[in-house]
Amino acid sequence: MSFRGVAVAVSISGLMQHLPLQIPLIMPWTANAQSGMGVADHCKSAYLELQRKKVHRYIIFKIDEKKKEVVVEKTGGPAESYEDFTSSLPENDCRYAVYDFDFVTSENCKKSKIFFIAWSPAVSRIRAKMLYATSKDRFRRELEGIHYEIQATDPTEMDLEVLQDRAH
Image 1 (cartoon, helix red, strand yellow):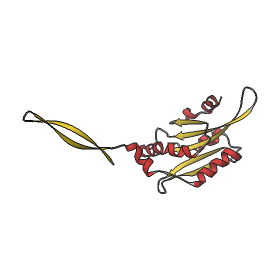
Image 2 (cartoon, rainbow, N blue to C red):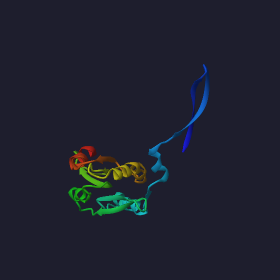
Image 3 (tube, one colour):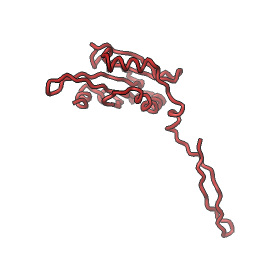
Image 4 (tube, rainbow, N blue to C red):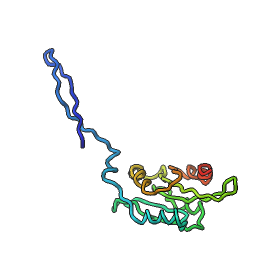
């Protein structure tokens, strides 16, 4: 914890006297960054398989609070649909996810964009929302090559149309 000295003026018998006052400078948003939520090695290797080898269509990650790290919860095969992916997300708990979105451009070219999705449903516990929100940037930096990021609190914020609009 760091301290910042502040001079306080106090009037005593018409004289001004300066007293040093120590006030703790508290930055709650740095607590998690300093303690750090780890990232399991399997998260990075699964992501590389999705990105380079197209082994997975999507990966769903969760925070293991006991291990204090992000782990792979589920992977979806290359033939799975976007509907399969969205139905794999819990209705009442937070998750991170990566989805490999394939599409065809107006020039008839096949393309692929990788989306990072921070899923934080409105009905999830406040503690979970805080934990996922404070750990997101650190985890996201571990996954190089993400094209777009979506933060969703309900399914309509991550409809397939949202991905299509962002990718085009």
